[in-house]
Length: 481
Ligand code: NAD
Ligand code: 6OD
Image 1 (cartoon, protein in one colour):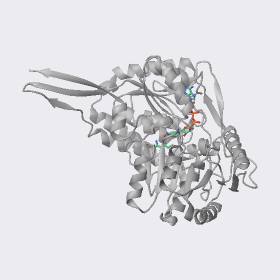
Image 2: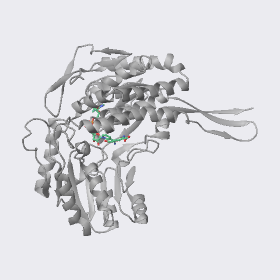
Image 3: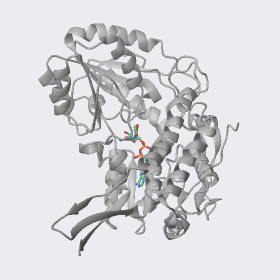
């Protein structure tokens, strides 16, 4: 199996270089070694991809029956599973995340995104209303057209397929712009798309950067009907402005600074294990990470002691070592950004554990799982998205107080509440301003449910009927006999 992969664009069913031959280098964050080159797309590549996608809407794909679409969407999922080790290897090479995580979470979930939406398509209907005799309204659903998919680097294949599967299921064509730091699994997905027999031009992948590059050319393109974007809130604002010129439909899944509330009656055994995951899995590079951990004061010391002990057991290291729990951060720049937050934490609070490069690891963008305490509520580490293996633990006294503190943020993506008091769990959940709330669990996903954030964490919801709604256009037809 290959440890390198050069990444070409996939336009109109062909793997191609950029017309001007531009390329950039792809680096393995765990070794700092080059692992291949990537074609760097610009306006010309986006134009060609959008033209191909628009043509494909009117071609064979546009005439596919629902049954044919279900079959091909399902087949893409099957082929991902057939090549899951190859996908997982490339995902870990690109991101630095543990191979076991890629193999057991990212890649199966990517396949399931296709399987789920293939199944879901069976039950997609529309509305019909009868008025007086002989008067009937009924709605028909059509694809919205060419959809631009722009993704971040933290869960590259999972998030790309989360958008691509419903877009294809609803009969659209797509132009995907993967994150520049993680181009490999999108390229392998293009191979799978070809193998699955998807007609040329239905799926296009253009590599490149964001500003003044493939990303912004895609969002500005007048023939793109919708953009589904996952990434930073700041980027979302830029994309919204660019997309406004041609009034594109937008779906935004943005950043989060998610409150994670532990009441004194919670089951601490469960809490500790899950909090390890919600803080440090994927190196903490998860938009849903429970990064503000509020612990009720009577159990604060006990929680801290047990959490520190359990965190010490985590193994940081080579993503391909099966014992590794925490891999490398995505890039040198990102590690520096996270270290910048740790400097603030040192000044305004206290680093209780971690906060430095693991001993003996000279290469790679590694950081020990880090626990921070004694931070003032207004500290930037409590307010801003750190997106690294850094857990801030904050004591609280009352329910009212913790709700107010949880909501005192511009973000509203997710929240977690730990308590055995049923009434309190629901009472608090109803008051927290977040699009996704977990009670006594974290990141338990069901793809039928609405997923997305409020406030600066996003616009719109995806998942199940919400994805169907986003990736299709309704026309109401009224008939009077
Ligand atoms: P980012 O916003 O920097 O980049 C995301 C994508 O947007 C990349 O493909 C990038 O090339 C592209 N891009 C950047 N500038 C652009 C522009 N001006 N026009 C068009 N495209 C542009 O985000 P990132 O650093 O790759 O990812 C981390 C962020 O993503 C975090 O804030 C995280 O919370 C967020 N995220 C959110 C969710 C969610 O579901 N809400 C999921 C994963 C990640
Ligand atoms: O599970 C999902 O569908 C999803 N969109 C997860 C996002 C995770 C953010 O990092």
